[in-house]
Length: 149
Image (cartoon, rainbow, N blue to C red):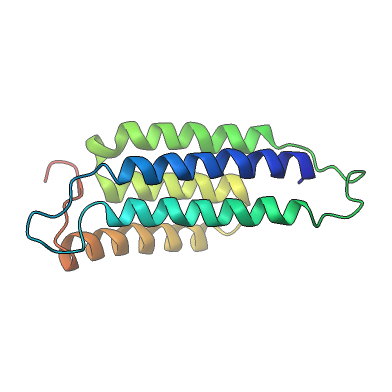
């Protein structure tokens, strides 16, 4: 990517990470006196986004003479993934987590890099079912599982 694009993206994501952490801190803490509450995971993700953004900004200062090399912006791939993410958000409740995540991952993987459909299907299925099982069965959380259930 270009130095300017990376720098601006890093700054934008840094601000998003800061807002994420500030808003996550407003989530109520656990009522049972536990130090682990519902705010821990979003706060951790916000901190991770801040750290990765800071690293990206830092890396832009180390770029050397790459201004002449410009990769074409791939609008079609971005648009496909963006629209599939919007569709994912709308279909999550209707189709359930497993089916909507499975479909989203198939579209995203194929949009990023056309490859083996078998590998894409296996990874999407293992991730969708694995995360659902881990979150709902092992952690006792609630996700919209399957349509009609």
